[in-house]
Length: 157
Length: 256
Image 1 (cartoon, chains in turn red, brown):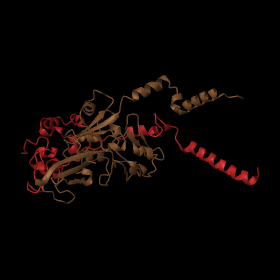
Image 2 (cartoon, rainbow over the protein chains, first blue to last red; image 1 turned 90 degrees about the horizontal axis):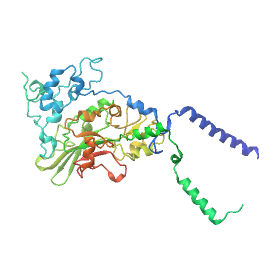
Image 3 (cartoon, rainbow over the protein chains, first blue to last red; image 1 turned 135 degrees about the vertical axis):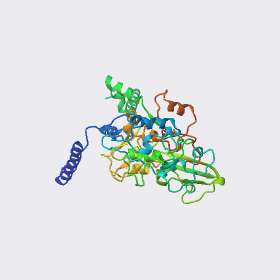
């Protein structure tokens, strides 16, 4: 064959070779089909462990009870028992090791999430909760100055 | 070389059969591999949303953002709560301010006052990734950065994603978004780091009303699986054929 045919051919072969070489270096060993479907299970296996090691922030109220027995006991007797501690106190992530005090949310808006009156028909789950009309009930005062959030049946002295 | 018609047809039929077999038919598994394949199949995560119980407090959205390090004030979220108010004339008013992150404390919908006397029904619908069996988002990924795990959760490889956004367009449920910090696609993964440790997803943990629950669909004794298999549940956009695995109790026709 003539040179003008062979020359570009070698260039093309070289480029393809380079692509394969680059793939060998750049693509990790654990990348491939892991499962029964090429469409859905073509991935880097190591990524699963990366997600499993993602840090957990919310610890659950069973962790709180270890130190805060009294508050947890009051709370578990009250109609608020279904509300998780960390909903209001924030995620306990590294408390008490790194963060000594959790940023407690005492805002009125916190309580209004459930207790703002929306005036919906009885079939709505919201209408079954005790509710206030924000602009008529003790405006701009924090609810917790009068109501005990751990047990709303008790008033704050 | 002679080739009778009989032999030719025989060989052709044999060749057609062999070539129709997937490559996996020729793989011989070791005992460990076979055991692992069976063991992994004991978990398939599913999710149950009871819209009858949701009060629209938005604690789930807040918890999700904190747990999964989603920028709190950016207009993106892995889960959100929609409010539907249907008036007696049949009009549906829908909103989800900040994805319901701060709850629904005002009865105005998109700055519009709805006369309470005129409301026929009102309800809240939490939404999240459906962890489909046939995920459209995974099919379109050009680099293999998103995939389905053995236990049915669709994950995104943040190292591998090139941020092209095809998956964001492909998801019929609109659950994917572009993560402002990591510059990759992002979505709910049922808090994969929690469920693989035996914990509940942050949204399930924070729901005071039991409106959100996690199920292992391969465990027939799982109480939530029992509800999904024995009660009347619905999924979103069934017609897309994606086989979503988030099931809804009390789903209204107005919910899309």
